[in-house]
Length: 526
Image (tube, rainbow, N blue to C red; front, side, top):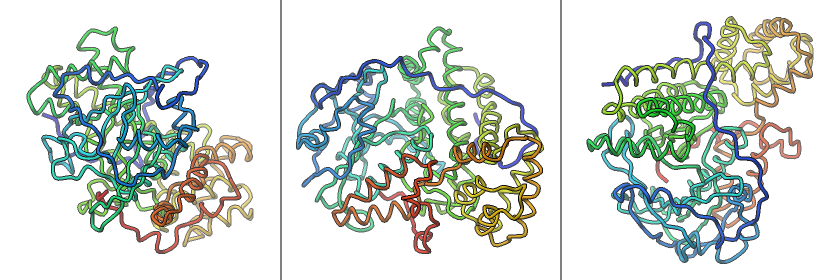
């Protein structure tokens, strides 16, 4: 029904037709917060009100020799959890499954999905368990999910475990993305163990406690569509709308479903635009890894760009480059078409296609807004697409470091060609003369805006991060943790919480990767 093979080129396009993106609802009014203990967390378990074949009740299988590796107090605040609770021996016992949290109801949820373009009829939480939802004093609700908690009926041939390596990567990157302002799941803690887990080599088993407003994904709808159960597609949509899109409930049934799909499309467009602007590659954009709320979900073989290469493939397992960096916008649209198809028995095809057709403008408008802000343009115009395209081509031709080049551009003074900051930018390129020529054009363009240099530089520093989670930085933290030293995880997390600040005491974390750091290979194995 829906064409899914179309590519989506996004670096340059004709003049924009401006469109407003759908925004997330505001948080509830601030209320006094009472710190909770583990035993007094306010659990609600709305997912278990759905039919029983949407999930399976499963108890976690405790890891042997479990111990706390890292605790994120900022994520704990989302649950109103007293940070001192992490110091209790019971903290590990509760999340490792040796004891059950009061009012928690562990379940593994059912879903399916397209993996590397091929439909897999049943996936589900093969190594994850949803303990329930905790409502905080601000009225926000957060799923509490264990990842790596043992086998479930959906594990297929898997062992239900995660390893320390991948768990640390997700813990760090989800919090790094939050610091960058990107919608994402959050990470409460990492629990390590002495239990051997067999991947390419023998590794140590670990568990991540993950938070999100919901873990419902595109594949949650696909499983019912392909089982020819449209009433369950509608039931699941009604559930998600009732929990997360309550303003749509006043609409009639058809308008509600169409508006729901439009919300998902808008959030997905905005999310992927942020990824492209920041140089983030997800690595495994299967439909079962796509959040219905437009969150960055399931951190596997992700990678931030070092040298700018639009065709960058961060996943060693992706031999065809399906999920290469420059393919992400097109794949997001492909996945949205898979989601829209699940509503085909419920809504006319024309109405579904009309929603999908909005993705392009939503994505392009947000991508251009972000990229023009990264260039410091106060009043963007259609002709600025050429300036942007030439800058990106310059980065690609010189294999310049994406993050460093933009950050140094933030410090330049193009109207003063001999300024040291301009030379520092040129140092990041092989072809210094080409950079100088582009800077001259850039300076002439900035002059039209008339923005004072200091103000323009300050604006650019707020959108061009100095610190990102480079793969080699994560690898250093992992190797030290494997030797029993967890301090690098905490140090790195503290830096990544403030990625736009100078933090001169941590400047070494902003340096280009060493040669070995560019050769790291990350795969789907975790």
